[in-house]
Image (cartoon, rainbow, N blue to C red; front, side, top):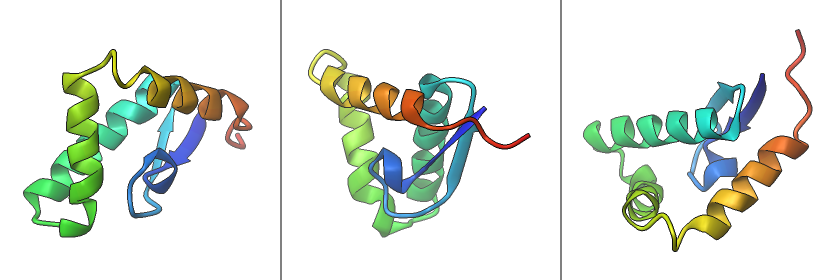
Length: 80
C-alpha cells in the first residue's frame, strides 16, 4: 500500500489517498474531486476539470498517466 495526496495528483489539498496501485489512487482522487465539486468547493474545480478532460481524452493524457504511475512506483510502501 502506498499513499499519494490530492496535491501530488494535481489538486489543491493534502488529503491522502491510499492504494495498492497508481490506478487505485487515481480513482480515489477522481472520487474526491467529484465530491468536492458537489459540495461547491471552488478550490478543487480546476483539478476536477483537468481530471474530466483526462477521462474524456485518455490518449492525450497518457503523459500525465505515465508520470503519475512512475511517481507512485517511486514511493516507499506505507509503514505497516
